[in-house]
Length: 490
Image 1 (cartoon, one colour):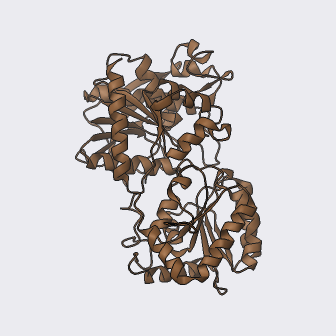
Image 2 (spheres, rainbow, N blue to C red):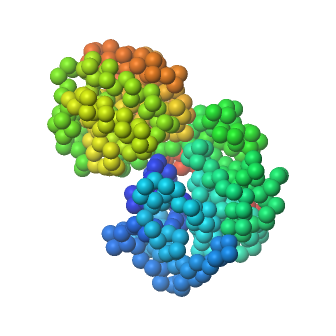
Image 3 (cartoon, one colour):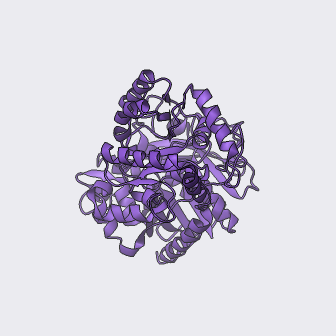
């Protein structure tokens, strides 16, 4: 099939979160299964064109597109070689994308023209397929930012101009990110104003909601784990007001667990590590732990586990459960290696804990991919006390690196981690979003840590878990076929 991916992110060159990793890995897995995958994304101003080998698409001239009442000059570029298995096209538009940032500026403030950026992205993706005369079987839109491509296909290009059936699939990576705007934004999208008033697709409590429109308009909708799919149709805490819309899709809404990119995340050949290791020989992990302790200035004299955290410092990740426990656990001999940026209050609390316990708590408030790999490899436990987690990739990476995850039973964490107290256990699971339940899980880990033989058994079991993209890609194929059949009916 010919699959047109529409995404604001793609790893490693334009990455904010897990969406970027998924687009890259899923595209490669589909290409390995002989599908023609083409990704269209904005050409952000901060991208290094020479380093990323981004060049103008010579056979397509510069163009102008209308967004709302303004015309914008654009040009299509390609990253890498035309012979690449996954072709990546980038849309240059200096007036909308010529600045640093994907969704927000360097201070974390969302761009005021985010809707215009999404509108141009959606237009350009459909226009590119037409200019290349490339028949599209499926438009695969990722998250709310890519929804305009689905809306424009259904309205501007209904039954014409986009070659191929162009069925549509919307993948929701996090339902909390919905792209809600004033209703006047419908003019920016160039869609009928009736769509922004009840019962229009875009209307949402007197505002315009891109994600809601995508849920209703796409031929098929999925999210990134089976458990999260169930949570988002039944519980307002997870559905963020869209649980009714999702439930109304019935069998057209499903969950497919993300896969892990084991080409990048493999301790046997990870160049970021001081020593390689695998399930048959874990001696290199001891080297990684000792070097990580030295690098971060930590001391593990009491023989308690070294706990790692890598991710965004936001309340969704359960940092409000973890941070109040750091002092108490540090005094008991636990050590912590924390890496990430995000909410300023959470960053300040992490820095304060590190200042109070410099031998036991290290916090690096930055994005450092190489250090992230060393934390996965050198830690004994990996902390994911998430309040909700659509899928999560970190727990899959930590398993492969022999680092036992400590997770709350929610979303993709529930689909991948089994408590060590049960048969086939590979980590530690707690139920309630409370510091007490997290502490109890860490105490259980502390007890198991003392039994080195059993700990090693659980480690190896986790390292042998297979969450590769092959099975997930096969499930996406089924959704693509269903969406293509629906697209032919336009």
